Image 1 (cartoon, rainbow, N blue to C red):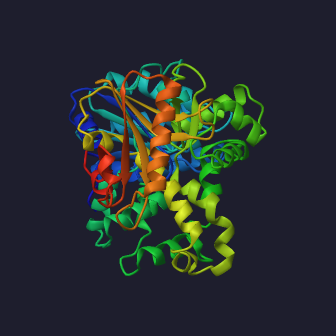
Image 2 (image 1 turned 30 degrees about the vertical axis):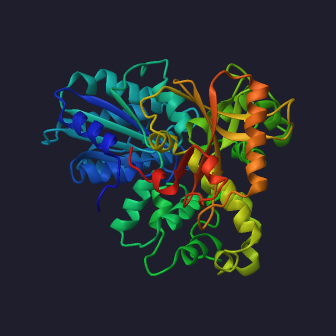
Image 3 (image 1 turned 180 degrees about the horizontal axis):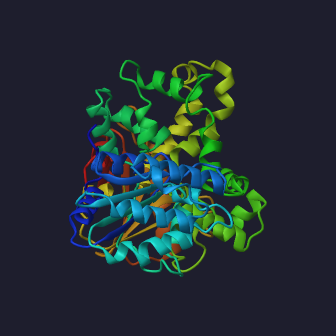
Amino acid sequence: MKIIGRKNEIETLTECYESKKSEFVAIYGRRRIGKTFLVKELFGEEFAFYTTGILNGDRNTQLQAFYEGLTRFGGSDLGEPKNWLEAFSKLNTLIEKSNLKKKVIFLDEVPWMSTMHSDFLPGLDYFWNRWASSRKDVLLIICGSAAAWMTDNIINNMGGLHNRLTSQILLRPFSLSECEEYFDENKIRMSRFQIAEAYMIFGGVPYYLSLFKSKYSLYQNVDRIYFSENAELRNEFENLYRSLFKSSENYIQVIKALSLKGIGMTQGEISEKSRIKDGGTLTKILKDLEISGFVRKYLAFGNKKKDALFQLIDFFSMFDLCFRSKREEYKNDYWLRTSSAPSHYAWSGFAFEKLCLLHIPQIRHALGISGVLTGIYSWRSKTYKPGVQIDLVIERGDRVINLCEMKYSSEEYVIDKQYDQNLRDKRGAFIAETRTKCAAHTTMITTYGLRKNMYQAMIPFEVTLDDLFVTI
């Protein structure tokens, strides 16, 4: 199967494979993002050893799985290890017998291997520092969906593994252009408007996209994958967070709190809504969610050093929390039946804003400012016009500010007299309250552009859905 996108990641792994010295690579990213697929497709049968951790398995279960891996690759005579130090010692012995020019060792889902009070990390430390690093023919790849664990225990390790990684790869969701390439490769025919809606439901998560079948329409696929009684993603929300975080209930409470306010919340507001005390525990939860790609942290315009906002950006979580209660109404055809309902339009407008926020490089490209230093903010009026907000403010190094309005529509968007006045009020409030000396311009980001009329003519910058599909 063809690997979609991942050009930089493939280049990194290929360079490590061809290196004249041993390499230690960590790959991390949220569950279902394609980490295992990337490594397996790239190296095929080139593994000298491969094993994976077992979700919720205890220490003995993890060691048994490791031993089965040793057996699979010709180490049946090595005996079952009693601890991780012994397990890695047996791996040394196995690799020394290998005739492969490059010994590719792939340890998948290492956070699951490192159970509480286990000696996994000391064993890994021993394996790399005392043996593998001194050779010239080892490529050790470790992988984990629990991105926060990978960051804390591997990337930022302060013990024996400190600064031992030679490369690290954060695998991100597909962009819109990569989703389009994926669907084309799998002969799933959809318009860009439909691909955008699929993205607004499932994000650019390859596993979710792999559940689509070409014989069904977009709406039929959504019903089959999520709403039907036997839907494969029916329990995905809970399973997702439970597989990544201990005390997952607290993480889910924070996600639910963030889903209530599209523009984002301060940590204090999150504490109030989630009922988790504002302190070290909540700070760690937010950090973990940010590292894992579920939440983004950014600053409001004018508050560049404090009052950071946290915003939910995981599309599937947003969709699940919005529509899970509806799954019992029609079970097999809810999305098809309600595609024109007010709830669908309300959700799509909200989700389109998040889609734009995850394609900032494409927006900058469309505005012709790819090479210009920019800051990305939001803005909420506090004094001049309470309640007024702008979800995307692009402050440019050329002393221009783009005040972005994002509108999702199945046809050209029409600016009427009332909305024109609304845009003028927002721009006026922003200039008056921030006292900016820069030129502030309203910028419309829409699906099919603006219908030409006397009000559209007053908009100096436009970005369309096609612009968001540009490969950057």
